Image 1: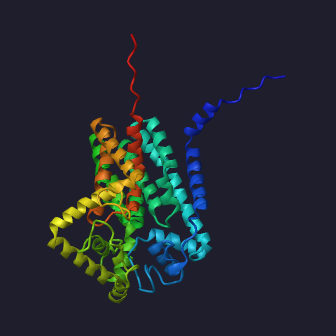
Image 2: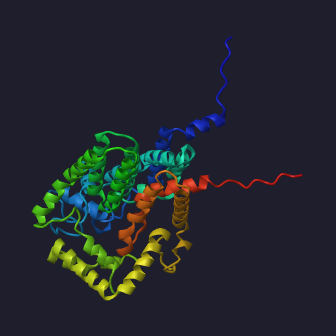
Image 3: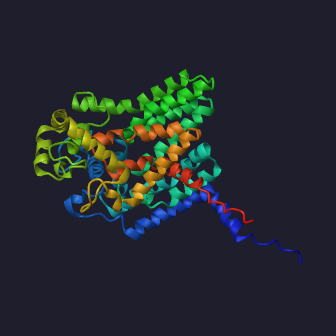
Length: 427
C-alpha cells in the first residue's frame, strides 16, 4: 500500500491563506455582502419619495431613466443640474433601468457594486504598502482593510461614490509609484485616463492631481528618465475625458462650469452667522422649504452664485471667526464630527475609532518621513492637499473615506515597527 502524504499543518494553511491576494479579495467581498443582509442596508425609508436612496445621486438617476436628462437633484422637476459629477448618477440610472427605480433589487445591486469596489481596494493597498514599507506591512495593511469596520460601513450603507473613489485614488497612488520606476507611454496614458475618470466621479480628489503629477515627474527627473511626452499624453487624455461634460455644461447653462456647480452653496452651508464648524444642514434645499423654493425660482447657477456671495461676505466681515471655524473643521475632519450631546472640541469620546486611525496615521507618517522611507513625501502630499478644502467648507466622516486606504497603510507601518521590550539577561 503506497504511503500517503501527510495533511498540511493548520499553521501552514493559515500562512498560505494570509498571503493570498485572491482570498483577501474574496473574504473582503463576502464579509461586506454578509453585512448587507445582517444590517438590511438594502432597505431604505419609503418616505419623501425615496430620497434617502442615494439622495441627489438617486434623484438624478431617476430623472435620467424617466427621460428628463441629467436634472432634478432635489424635490420636484427643477431642470438641468451640475450639482453632482456625472459618473455615479449614470451608474445609478443603469441600475434603475435594469432593476427598477428605487427598488430593493437596485439597492442591492448598487451596494453590492460598492462592496466589490471596497474589496478590490485591498489589492492596491497591498502593493503600495509593499513598495513603500515591505512585504509584512503590505499584508498587515491589506488584511486591516479587509476587516476594518469603517471600510465596510461606506461599502454597505450609502448609495454613493465613496468606495469607488477610495479604489480609484489608491490605484492612482500606485500608478505614481510605477511611473517612478518604469518607462512606457501606456503608464502615462492610464494615469491621465484614471484622473479623467476621477474628475467625473469625485472632483474633490483632484486636489491631489497637481502634487501627484509633479511628484512622478520629479522622481523620474532625478533618476534621469524623460517624462515630457508622457506628461503631455496624460494631460491630453485627461482633458479628453472631461471635455464632453464641460461642453454639455456650457451648452446647458451658457457658461463655463468645471464639472460641478455647487461649490458656492456648500461654502455657505459651512459659513454664516450661525456657523459652528459643521454642516448647517437646515439650510440645504432638501431640508429647508424656503431654500428649495429659492433654488427652483432662481435656477441652480444663480442660486449657487447667490449663496457664494453670502458666504464670501461673511468671511470678509469675520476673518477671525472664519479662522477659528477653520481650526475647528480641521479638528473635526481628523477627530470626528461631534455627535448630539458632545462638546465641540472633543468628539473623540464617541468617535475614538475614527480618531485612533488618524493618530496612528500621523504617527506613521512622521516616522516614515524621519526614516526617509520610499514615497513618504507622496503620502505627505496626499494628507496635506486632499482635505484642505474641507477645512474651509465643512467636514463629514464620509469625506475622509477616499484617503483611508493610505491612512491604513501608514497605521500598519507604525504598528509593525512596535517590538516588545527585551527582558534583561539574568546574571
